[in-house]
Amino acid sequence: MARMDFRALCGFYESELFDHILPFWMKRGIDSEQGGYFTCFTNSGDRLLYPHKFTWSQGRFLWTLSRLNRTFKGRRPAKETRDWLAQAAHGAEFLMKHARLPNGNCAFILSREGRPILLDAQGNPREAGPDEAYDSSVYADHFVVYGMAEYAMASGDARAWRYAADLYESARGRHLQAVYRSDPYPVPAGYEAHGRPMILMETAHEMALAAEQFGDSRAGVYLSEAQRYMAEVMDKFRDPATNLMTEMWSGDPKKRGTMLGGYVNPGHALECMWFVCHLARRVGAPERIAQAIQVIKANCRAGWDEQFGGFFQFVDRTGGAPRGPVPPELENAEMIRKLRGNWDNKLWWPHSEALYMLLLGYELSRDSELLDWYWRVHDYTFRTFPNSDRGIGEWIQIRARDGSPVDKVVALPVKDPFHITRSFILCEELLRQARPD
Image 1 (cartoon, rainbow, N blue to C red):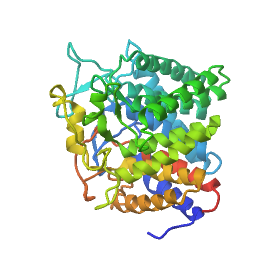
Image 2: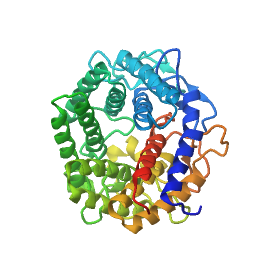
Image 3: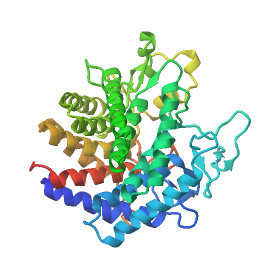
Image 4: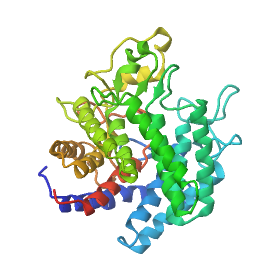
């Protein structure tokens, strides 16, 4: 694909977003009867598999609709932006009514009607057994907070803001006390996950923005918390010698030499770095932006498949498949299974996140290597993930190493509009205001 100037590229993203991605979700993703959203589609998007509602995806869908309204209000037809906000309101009401369990935590999965459920091996709903729990991932709580805070800003709904603030404190408290679960990526004992300070940083930053809009005195507290999590990401999980991001860090040097201690998730690192850049711009921390630029380049080099193109899902920090010793007690751990079985998958979400991060990194640094990487990723992404049936519109989200479609689940059995739509919104915003390339 020939390179476009930034004005043409901005139009390209608008067309992809409004002509292909959003029509799928507005037609198929809205549950107008029960509230909330449908997200359990096949990888190709041709049919809905289940009406179950993962609160993880409900919060992300809510964020997407709310941010669309905030970003394009006054620039898109009024009927369209009002519809986004109306559908966001239905999702917010569904979550406020059903998401939280009596203990204050969010259920991980809800039935279509909003009842907490677990799933059997065939994906059918069932009740929790004596030693099971419905609140199996604190990340679901954070995505509900993320969506609810964005909705509160779009709508001015003070009740939604109070809900977001209360749930944020609950989720944050569980993280600080290390009494939480993190499905679908459970963290083995003795390790800390990069995803913890990463999601706390972005959620706290979102909370600071919402608090300012509502005149809430906690805005400064949230912003300080976000900076503390940014420091943890960059000073603990970033290897200063290589600028690679460690996904599982341990204070025990022996654990750092294992398969778990030595793998890198390139897409996660790239997504996290735009969180860092947004926050660092806001608080005036140019040194963090400079570090982030080096992390972007290092993770692109380490994660790129030179044979077939695209980013691997996981790689060893020295390159190639994750390797290193696995303690006997972790041989059957879920993360070991994922590292061994899924490492060379090509997923839609790391590539959509990379598109925005590389454009943002170039705009902030004018480092030509980032622009070269952008076009390399752009070419691979748009020839690999968009559905050949443009009538469907949504991308095919999982590919094998050689780019062929794969019908499998790598995290959750969901397809939600979050990563692609968020990236395209942010790319459009940036390109509309960017300096000429």
